[in-house]
Amino acid sequence: MGRYTMNRTVKAVISLLLCAALAVGTVAFAAADDGLTTDALHFGSDGHFKILHVTDTHLNADNAANSTRLIAMACDAEQPDLVMLTGDIAPEGTYEKTGERVDQLMQVFETRQIPVAVAFGNHDSENGAYTREEAMALYNAYACSIAIDDGDRLTGCGTYRIPLCASDGNELRFNLWVFDSGDYDGEGHYANVAEDQVEWYREQSAAIEREAGKKINSLVFQHIIVPEIYDALEEVDRKTAFSYEHLYEKGRYFRFSGSNTNYGMLNEYPCPGYYNHGQFDAMVERGDVLAMFTGHDHTNAFGVKYKGIDIVNSLSTRYNGDTSSTRYGYRVIELDEAAPDRYETRVVRWYDFVNESAVKALAQDEADRTLLAEIRFRGFFRKFLTDFCVFFVQAATGRRVRYPD
Image (cartoon, rainbow, N blue to C red; front, side, top):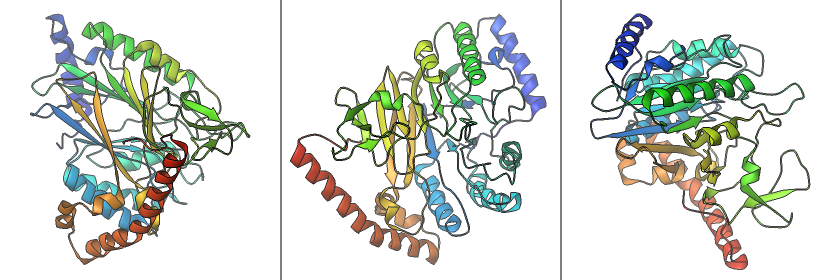
């Protein structure tokens, strides 16, 4: 908990020491470092590592106070070792306003000494008021930020690797890959991870395997989901309940495929990039990625196992004062040092969160208590309606539309 990034001088010294350790047979991670690797985080003394996935907060004057209140309570309830921000966090109209929203959010993590990694979304710089590099500078002004600005080395801003080392030393046990999946292509479609980023992943993955003498398992975090999500779904008739039209191919409708392992529920059509630059295929080929976690599609909280990789979408982590408290919330991902070939994940929606008995004790003042009461009241009706529709469709059709998260 609260392992901050060290300054570059200390990092350079440690890198030299780790390289020396390699010469005597210690497995380390520094030799694969091309300047796009953060200082290592470590599994806890209990052998576990918990990630809080926060995405699509879309902080503005109307929702920032309540959204950050809930995120603060989520941090206190979950006690994460790392917060992953995957885009569309504070896309305000000016650099100054964005700075204010970023400060509201980052103070939550700074005061709790929780390391924070940042990946950008399509809205984070689209209005032209600031660049992605300027936005990254806002986050990196906080000691808790471990994000890396990759400069001119790769497309976008913020593609890097986070090594997770053993609880009792510097042996590499796991990897977290962070990608900037871009905003829009030249034709106005959603973008995707570019060719040079894919090649960087290939090279780094292969170098890490050579050093360790084995593949090191990993998770991927980025904003925009990969195009292969539609390959992992099943095409159906347009009148099929809980099916959704393809974003780019009108007249084609998709739902969960019974032949795949599914998690959660589709609430809207997935929105991948239009062009495919081979990211998913490269990860299938390398065989070291267990799952890819994305945001972007605000009410989708689901996962589909496809070609050995879980394609997972997390729901928007904001509160807009409406009945979407049953569709917005956060995701938790837990890793076990003793079992690096798997992970555990769960989705927590705001309505369910505020109804946990322990959450009542997290309310710091009357504003917190008022917010929790509002969510309980508004969310009850949405949850009732959603559960009724799901039950009716599953009873009438005999097929599942919602799976355990």
